[in-house]
Structures are given as C-alpha cells and as structure tokens.
Length: 252
Image (cartoon, one colour):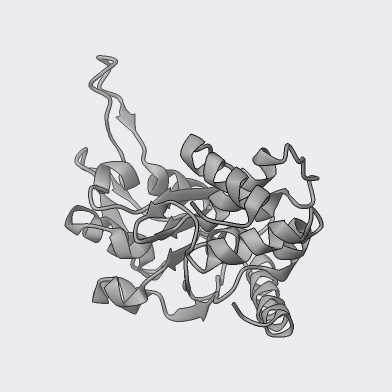
C-alpha cells in the first residue's frame, strides 16, 4: 500500500480534478475521463464526485451480457403496454446528467455500439432506437469510466476516453476513519487491500465490502460525513471471516 504521505498527495490531486469537473461550463464539458487502479481504491466514489452540482448522477456496472437494452431502452412486453422504457444512458442523455460506467473492461460485444455512442464527442453523439427515434445528449452531459484493468478495454472505447487518471490507493481519510475504531480495523483494511481477505469479485477482492462488514461485525455506526467512503453489502460468510479476523488477527 502506498505510504500515507504519498496517498494524501494522490488524493489531493484527485480532489482537484473532481473540483474542476464540478465547476466546468456545461456548454464546454471537460474531456471524458477513465479512472483506473486496483479493486477498492475509490474509483467509483471519485467518478460520482466529478458530477456538477446541477447534474443528476446515473451509474451502471458493465458485464459480458450488458446490451443496448440496458443502456438505451426496451419495449415493456410484461405489462402489455409495450411502452418504451428508457435505459440508463437514455435517461442521462435526456437531462444532461452524469453517467458513471463502472468496470468498462467487462463490457461484451452486445454493448459496444451503444458505448461508442455514449462516449462520442457531443457534436456527433447520437443513437437510433428500434422505434426509429434518434437520441442525442442534452448539452452538459458527462460520462466517466472506471476499470481495474485498462488493457482489457476495447481499443475504440479507450480512444474515446482521452484523459486517464490512476487511483492507486484508497483514500487516506477512509482508512483513518476506519482506524479510529481500533488498530485491528486498520490491519483488516490492509489485509483486504492486499487481497488476503475478501470475496473474489470479477477478479479481485471486494475491499469495500470487507470494510463494511467490519463495521457491521462490531455494530459500529458511521456519521454522514464518513458514509461516502463505504459501500455496504451483506455476506454471511464474509461477515464471519471478518469477525474471526477482528478477534484473532488471522484469516481462516
């Protein structure tokens, strides 16, 4: 793990970048960014922070079965109305929102054309629905991608993300928050980050879930100012592993 001083400097630069995007002119948004780095370092948190204050934030995690239906919409055959249900990208385009595309390296073939449209420059971006309607992003739309492995992202997608920013280490503020609960919690954070504890998820340990389980195991509560650093989920097996670690310092 990076030294605390180095990590503080990294996150100072990231905060400066996010602030620049938050204050950008909606008519002249900054280049689309790809945040890359190991699992659990805060890429998604930072991607959300880059939205302007007037923007609604949308988010989707890419996977092999992701398709144009998820991104731009589909007909609702279940209700019998066959009404068009807009996907997450269509909704973000319609309001000039901020779209976070998580784990871009996992996007499959069926989503590529949609992703190309989403990441195109505003002047040429468009997508034609099966209904025949052509969608274009409202002025001010922004998109940020995240990845654990940029080398696995398809070339045309990489080319559309002109600004690459590494997030190599978790926010020191998040780790300091955790360490306030005791030295063993800091040990847990380091073990999770090193991959010695956690559940495999798309090739890496679920670092953020381990931290959430630690607080649940100790029945701790965090304040609103600390909440953004943690993503809560529930796994009985992981919870038990975390409890054992907090008691013994050992990984079963």
